[in-house]
Length: 251
Image (cartoon, rainbow, N blue to C red; front, side):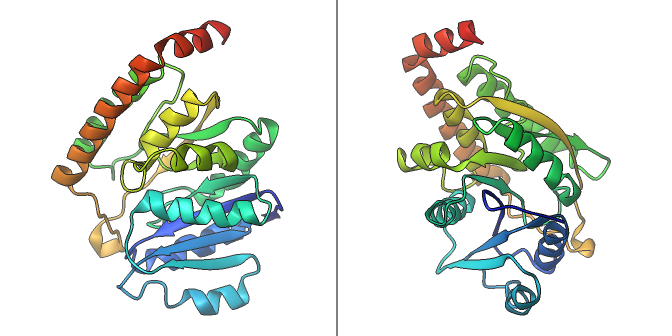
Protein backbone atom coordinates (compact mmCIF):
# COMPACT_ATOMS: atom_id res chain seq x y z
CA UNK A 1 0.00 0.00 0.00
CA UNK A 2 1.31 3.46 -0.95
CA UNK A 3 0.43 6.84 0.57
CA UNK A 4 0.61 10.29 -0.96
CA UNK A 5 0.13 13.93 0.01
CA UNK A 6 -0.55 14.98 -3.60
CA UNK A 7 -2.50 12.13 -5.26
CA UNK A 8 -5.73 10.69 -3.89
CA UNK A 9 -8.35 8.17 -4.98
CA UNK A 10 -11.85 9.62 -5.33
CA UNK A 11 -14.89 7.33 -5.47
CA UNK A 12 -18.27 8.91 -6.30
CA UNK A 13 -21.14 6.66 -5.27
CA UNK A 14 -24.90 6.62 -5.72
CA UNK A 15 -26.91 3.60 -4.51
CA UNK A 16 -24.09 1.17 -5.27
CA UNK A 17 -25.09 -1.53 -2.80
CA UNK A 18 -22.55 -3.81 -1.10
CA UNK A 19 -20.03 -3.29 -3.91
CA UNK A 20 -19.20 0.11 -2.43
CA UNK A 21 -17.50 -1.29 0.67
CA UNK A 22 -15.69 -3.92 -1.41
CA UNK A 23 -14.42 -1.22 -3.76
CA UNK A 24 -13.29 1.06 -0.93
CA UNK A 25 -11.45 -1.79 0.79
CA UNK A 26 -9.75 -2.79 -2.47
CA UNK A 27 -8.67 0.79 -3.20
CA UNK A 28 -7.38 1.23 0.36
CA UNK A 29 -5.29 -1.92 0.05
CA UNK A 30 -3.31 -0.24 -2.76
CA UNK A 31 -3.44 3.50 -1.99
CA UNK A 32 -4.02 6.08 0.73
CA UNK A 33 -5.86 8.41 0.96
CA UNK A 34 -9.21 7.26 -0.42
CA UNK A 35 -12.14 9.67 -0.41
CA UNK A 36 -15.74 8.67 -1.09
CA UNK A 37 -18.43 11.14 -2.17
CA UNK A 38 -21.90 9.84 -1.31
CA UNK A 39 -24.11 11.41 -3.97
CA UNK A 40 -27.43 11.42 -2.14
CA UNK A 41 -27.63 7.62 -1.78
CA UNK A 42 -30.79 6.26 -0.18
CA UNK A 43 -30.04 2.52 -0.30
CA UNK A 44 -27.99 2.45 2.92
CA UNK A 45 -24.82 1.45 1.04
CA UNK A 46 -22.89 4.21 2.81
CA UNK A 47 -23.81 3.03 6.32
CA UNK A 48 -20.79 0.71 6.81
CA UNK A 49 -18.34 3.43 5.76
CA UNK A 50 -18.31 5.19 9.12
CA UNK A 51 -16.97 2.10 10.87
CA UNK A 52 -14.59 1.42 7.98
CA UNK A 53 -13.24 4.99 8.14
CA UNK A 54 -12.40 4.48 11.82
CA UNK A 55 -10.34 1.41 10.92
CA UNK A 56 -8.84 2.46 7.57
CA UNK A 57 -6.40 5.37 7.75
CA UNK A 58 -6.84 7.95 5.03
CA UNK A 59 -10.48 7.11 4.31
CA UNK A 60 -12.80 10.11 4.26
CA UNK A 61 -16.50 10.20 3.45
CA UNK A 62 -18.07 13.33 1.93
CA UNK A 63 -21.81 13.61 1.43
CA UNK A 64 -24.15 15.46 -0.91
CA UNK A 65 -27.72 15.94 0.37
CA UNK A 66 -29.36 14.78 -2.87
CA UNK A 67 -28.38 12.92 -6.02
CA UNK A 68 -26.68 15.41 -8.33
CA UNK A 69 -24.79 13.18 -10.77
CA UNK A 70 -21.32 11.71 -11.11
CA UNK A 71 -19.73 14.90 -12.37
CA UNK A 72 -21.22 16.95 -9.54
CA UNK A 73 -19.91 14.44 -7.01
CA UNK A 74 -16.43 14.56 -8.56
CA UNK A 75 -16.47 18.37 -8.55
CA UNK A 76 -17.44 18.39 -4.87
CA UNK A 77 -14.56 16.02 -4.11
CA UNK A 78 -11.88 17.80 -6.12
CA UNK A 79 -12.77 21.20 -4.68
CA UNK A 80 -12.29 19.76 -1.20
CA UNK A 81 -9.08 18.01 -2.27
CA UNK A 82 -7.65 21.19 -3.80
CA UNK A 83 -8.38 23.05 -0.56
CA UNK A 84 -6.19 20.53 1.28
CA UNK A 85 -3.28 20.77 -1.13
CA UNK A 86 -3.86 17.73 -3.35
CA UNK A 87 -2.87 18.18 -6.98
CA UNK A 88 -4.15 15.00 -8.67
CA UNK A 89 -7.11 12.69 -8.31
CA UNK A 90 -7.74 9.18 -9.56
CA UNK A 91 -11.45 8.58 -10.19
CA UNK A 92 -12.67 5.08 -9.44
CA UNK A 93 -16.20 3.79 -9.99
CA UNK A 94 -17.87 2.44 -6.87
CA UNK A 95 -19.39 -0.62 -8.54
CA UNK A 96 -16.23 -2.71 -8.59
CA UNK A 97 -15.73 -2.64 -12.36
CA UNK A 98 -12.38 -0.87 -12.24
CA UNK A 99 -9.16 -2.72 -11.30
CA UNK A 100 -7.95 -1.37 -7.94
CA UNK A 101 -4.65 -3.20 -8.38
CA UNK A 102 -3.81 -0.81 -11.24
CA UNK A 103 -4.05 2.27 -9.03
CA UNK A 104 -0.29 2.41 -8.19
CA UNK A 105 0.71 2.13 -11.87
CA UNK A 106 -1.65 4.95 -12.86
CA UNK A 107 -0.43 7.13 -10.01
CA UNK A 108 3.19 6.47 -10.96
CA UNK A 109 2.45 7.50 -14.55
CA UNK A 110 0.86 10.70 -13.25
CA UNK A 111 3.90 11.48 -11.12
CA UNK A 112 6.13 10.98 -14.17
CA UNK A 113 3.95 13.33 -16.25
CA UNK A 114 2.18 15.64 -13.77
CA UNK A 115 0.82 17.90 -16.50
CA UNK A 116 -0.93 15.03 -18.27
CA UNK A 117 -4.13 13.12 -17.62
CA UNK A 118 -3.75 9.36 -17.37
CA UNK A 119 -6.66 7.72 -19.17
CA UNK A 120 -7.60 4.09 -18.76
CA UNK A 121 -7.86 2.10 -21.96
CA UNK A 122 -10.42 -0.59 -21.12
CA UNK A 123 -9.83 -4.26 -21.80
CA UNK A 124 -13.26 -5.86 -21.96
CA UNK A 125 -13.94 -9.50 -21.18
CA UNK A 126 -16.96 -11.71 -21.79
CA UNK A 127 -18.93 -10.00 -18.98
CA UNK A 128 -19.21 -6.73 -20.95
CA UNK A 129 -22.62 -6.11 -22.58
CA UNK A 130 -21.97 -6.16 -26.32
CA UNK A 131 -24.48 -3.40 -27.02
CA UNK A 132 -22.70 -1.01 -24.67
CA UNK A 133 -19.24 -1.93 -25.97
CA UNK A 134 -20.34 -1.29 -29.54
CA UNK A 135 -22.31 1.82 -28.67
CA UNK A 136 -19.37 3.53 -26.96
CA UNK A 137 -17.51 3.51 -30.29
CA UNK A 138 -19.81 6.32 -31.43
CA UNK A 139 -18.86 8.50 -28.46
CA UNK A 140 -15.19 7.63 -28.99
CA UNK A 141 -15.37 8.70 -32.64
CA UNK A 142 -16.86 12.08 -31.78
CA UNK A 143 -14.39 12.66 -28.94
CA UNK A 144 -11.57 12.01 -31.42
CA UNK A 145 -13.18 14.37 -33.92
CA UNK A 146 -13.59 17.10 -31.30
CA UNK A 147 -9.91 16.87 -30.34
CA UNK A 148 -8.49 16.16 -33.82
CA UNK A 149 -7.47 12.66 -32.74
CA UNK A 150 -5.35 13.81 -29.81
CA UNK A 151 -5.31 10.29 -28.33
CA UNK A 152 -8.15 10.09 -25.79
CA UNK A 153 -8.81 6.46 -26.64
CA UNK A 154 -11.96 5.48 -24.75
CA UNK A 155 -13.99 8.56 -23.91
CA UNK A 156 -16.37 6.87 -21.46
CA UNK A 157 -14.00 4.89 -19.26
CA UNK A 158 -13.84 6.62 -15.88
CA UNK A 159 -10.68 5.02 -14.45
CA UNK A 160 -8.39 8.05 -14.79
CA UNK A 161 -5.94 10.37 -13.06
CA UNK A 162 -6.69 14.05 -13.55
CA UNK A 163 -4.62 17.08 -12.61
CA UNK A 164 -7.07 18.85 -10.32
CA UNK A 165 -6.47 22.52 -11.21
CA UNK A 166 -7.34 22.34 -14.94
CA UNK A 167 -10.24 19.98 -14.24
CA UNK A 168 -11.78 22.42 -11.74
CA UNK A 169 -11.35 25.28 -14.24
CA UNK A 170 -12.98 23.26 -17.01
CA UNK A 171 -15.93 22.26 -14.85
CA UNK A 172 -16.47 25.70 -13.37
CA UNK A 173 -16.50 27.13 -16.90
CA UNK A 174 -19.67 25.26 -17.88
CA UNK A 175 -23.00 24.21 -16.37
CA UNK A 176 -22.59 20.79 -18.01
CA UNK A 177 -20.31 17.85 -17.06
CA UNK A 178 -22.38 17.14 -13.93
CA UNK A 179 -23.95 13.78 -14.78
CA UNK A 180 -23.20 10.90 -17.16
CA UNK A 181 -21.62 13.40 -19.57
CA UNK A 182 -18.74 13.99 -17.14
CA UNK A 183 -16.16 11.47 -18.39
CA UNK A 184 -16.18 12.23 -22.14
CA UNK A 185 -16.56 15.99 -21.75
CA UNK A 186 -13.80 16.16 -19.14
CA UNK A 187 -11.36 14.43 -21.48
CA UNK A 188 -12.28 16.65 -24.44
CA UNK A 189 -12.18 19.92 -22.51
CA UNK A 190 -8.86 19.08 -20.89
CA UNK A 191 -7.36 18.39 -24.31
CA UNK A 192 -8.69 21.78 -25.38
CA UNK A 193 -6.94 23.25 -22.32
CA UNK A 194 -3.63 21.73 -23.44
CA UNK A 195 -3.59 18.73 -21.06
CA UNK A 196 -1.91 15.80 -22.78
CA UNK A 197 -3.65 12.41 -22.66
CA UNK A 198 -1.58 9.35 -21.71
CA UNK A 199 -3.29 5.97 -22.07
CA UNK A 200 -2.73 2.90 -19.94
CA UNK A 201 -4.57 -0.43 -20.25
CA UNK A 202 -6.97 -1.52 -17.52
CA UNK A 203 -9.24 -4.53 -17.32
CA UNK A 204 -12.99 -4.12 -16.81
CA UNK A 205 -15.43 -6.51 -15.19
CA UNK A 206 -19.19 -6.18 -15.34
CA UNK A 207 -21.05 -7.85 -12.48
CA UNK A 208 -24.45 -9.50 -12.80
CA UNK A 209 -27.22 -8.40 -10.39
CA UNK A 210 -26.86 -11.68 -8.47
CA UNK A 211 -23.16 -10.80 -8.00
CA UNK A 212 -24.03 -7.39 -6.56
CA UNK A 213 -23.73 -5.52 -9.85
CA UNK A 214 -25.61 -2.22 -10.03
CA UNK A 215 -26.06 -0.05 -13.11
CA UNK A 216 -27.87 3.28 -13.33
CA UNK A 217 -27.29 3.59 -17.07
CA UNK A 218 -30.49 4.44 -18.93
CA UNK A 219 -30.21 3.82 -22.66
CA UNK A 220 -32.67 6.52 -23.71
CA UNK A 221 -31.89 9.25 -21.17
CA UNK A 222 -28.11 8.87 -21.17
CA UNK A 223 -27.76 8.46 -24.93
CA UNK A 224 -29.81 11.63 -25.42
CA UNK A 225 -27.51 13.37 -22.94
CA UNK A 226 -24.44 12.16 -24.86
CA UNK A 227 -25.97 13.25 -28.17
CA UNK A 228 -26.56 16.77 -26.84
CA UNK A 229 -23.08 16.82 -25.32
CA UNK A 230 -21.36 15.88 -28.56
CA UNK A 231 -23.45 18.41 -30.48
CA UNK A 232 -22.15 21.11 -28.14
CA UNK A 233 -18.57 19.84 -28.29
CA UNK A 234 -18.49 19.60 -32.08
CA UNK A 235 -19.58 23.24 -32.26
CA UNK A 236 -16.99 24.12 -29.64
CA UNK A 237 -14.31 22.31 -31.63
CA UNK A 238 -15.18 24.31 -34.74
CA UNK A 239 -14.65 27.54 -32.82
CA UNK A 240 -11.31 26.21 -31.53
CA UNK A 241 -10.19 24.68 -34.81
CA UNK A 242 -7.20 27.00 -35.43
CA UNK A 243 -5.94 26.37 -31.86
CA UNK A 244 -6.47 22.62 -32.19
CA UNK A 245 -4.61 22.53 -35.49
CA UNK A 246 -1.74 24.48 -33.94
CA UNK A 247 -1.65 22.03 -31.04
CA UNK A 248 -1.54 19.07 -33.41
CA UNK A 249 1.28 20.62 -35.44
CA UNK A 250 3.32 21.12 -32.27
CA UNK A 251 2.76 17.56 -31.04
